[in-house]
Amino acid sequence: MLMTGTSGPSASNITEISTQTRSCQKCNQRKTRCSKTRPCTSCVKLGIECIFPPPGRAPRRKKRALKAELVSKVKSLEQKVRELEDERNSPQSDPGVHEEPSSIESNARPSVARTQQASRPPVLARDELEGRFGKLVVEEGSSRYVSHEALASFRTEYGKISTQSKPGASASSEPHDLRSSEGNNSNSFLFGYRALAHSLRDLYPTPLASQALWAAYEKNVAPLILILHKPTIRNLVRKAATNGEFLDATSDALVFAVYFAAVMSMKPDECQVQLGVDRQYAIQHYRFAAEQALSRADFLHARCLSVLQAAVLFLIVAWRCDDVRFVWAMTALVYRLAQGLGLHRDGEKLGLGPFETEIRRRLWWYIYLLDSQTSEHQAMSPQIYEGTYDTEFPLNINDDDLSPEATDRFKGRDGFTEMTFCLIRCEINVRYRRILKGSMPGLGPTRRSVEDITHALTDMSTFIENKRLQLCDLSVPIQWVAATVTRIALARSWLVAHLSLIGSDDLSSDLWQQRRELLFQTAIEVLEFTHLLESSDETAHWSWMFEMYRQWHAFAFVLSELCVRPSQETDRAWMIANLMFQRWQQDGPPQGWVLWKPLSRLMQRVTVKRAGEIVTDRANK
Image (cartoon, rainbow, N blue to C red; front, side, top):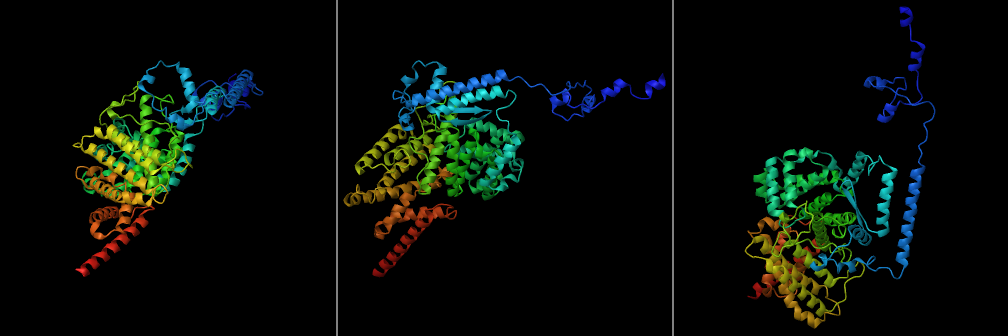
């Protein structure tokens, strides 16, 4: 009996270790390789019961109900498309649904009385907004803007179908590693492939240096560039200083953009004392770090507001590095990414919360300013035209008045705030464009008489004077800066508007001669106040930004007048023109500035002329 029991397996045991044709249920659930023996190797290791499915093919799942539901959804979509086509072709359709952005612009700022009216049911109001202004689709922390009303409706229904047909799938089934590797390759094409060669952890400053950089940012950068919400970014920088390894790629991009801006705003001796390194080395270090962080955050495929904030701050500061053409070209890319996030549509019309709406407005208007200024620097027309957006101005408000948890609308202040300086710049830019140019691309300059333009410029100056300049206390440095920059911008607008009319029939030779002397004095004052901003001790910590905006219109006009006027009448003009040119030469020829060579030749011509006149005067004496 003993021999029989131990000499070999019984017939039943032979059946149990036989090979199966299909994987066991546990291996199938765990998506692991099954040895297909009974019991299988994996179940033996786990100590669990091994259960195999019955022999034969697995029965097909019944999908008749799901297919019927999908067919019903498709028919519903087809019906909606037909209704939209009928509505579009109907002569009695509501013009407000399909009106152009330029007509929306006139209604962009509802009155207080209108906002206090009883609102319609939330679902109806939101459907109307999505049909008129498009829809912001948010998925897993990212967002994209869909502008066509039919496509926005289809996107909503498609999302329902996708969720029902793939209950176990996430919104993005594409492997994260694959997306990031592809994104890094294309981002490296912009920033250089060296941007993937180092770990970000090695590029972070010490906690002490991080504190110094944040202090420099708050003092030198934030009063002039308020893209970021200071209380929020302050906490992020503190976290980076102590637990930087726990930051995600987006946070890395924001923090290094702040560090790059801070270093650029510091003086050489400040860098040496507070950071212990040469300023030029620090600039190169943190620019490289910011580029690497943007690349790793997949900047080219940005569907996150924070990545775009970091990119815009980076480009503004990179402009100070005299990399003008690079910034101008990259601004075009940023503009497209902003459109993809729907920044050209006001957040309230998209149904967003008050905090996100305000942050989006700030970001959009800094992109607007960057586009305007870099295009002018390249002697090109801007990309953003009036009538192609309806984003309202940011509120005249301080950062401490904003809260991410707020649900009620914020209220603007009456006095000077942290946003007043930005608002002045935005209002002057928008009003000046409307005076001289058409609202849409391809329309060209608006044909207006000299009297009309002069009257419009006077109205603009009066509006800014009454609404903004009266708020400025000239004893406060930042408010004195705002007032001075405003007067420079208004004088420059008057100068450029007249220069653009030279050679036209509207500006006769007699009228030109009457205004020529006034224009000459205006150009001199523009250069003098600009030099004062750059060289004043009270505003020295902001001079890094003032030096970015070269008043080349006034400079070129002064030089052209110096070529034809006697030297003894132009000593004041020559002195300020020479000072400005020397400051521009301090850091070497500006990289990518197309006007540098012609202005240099004009300066050389004036220098030769004045030297010859001095020799002649001495000989006559």
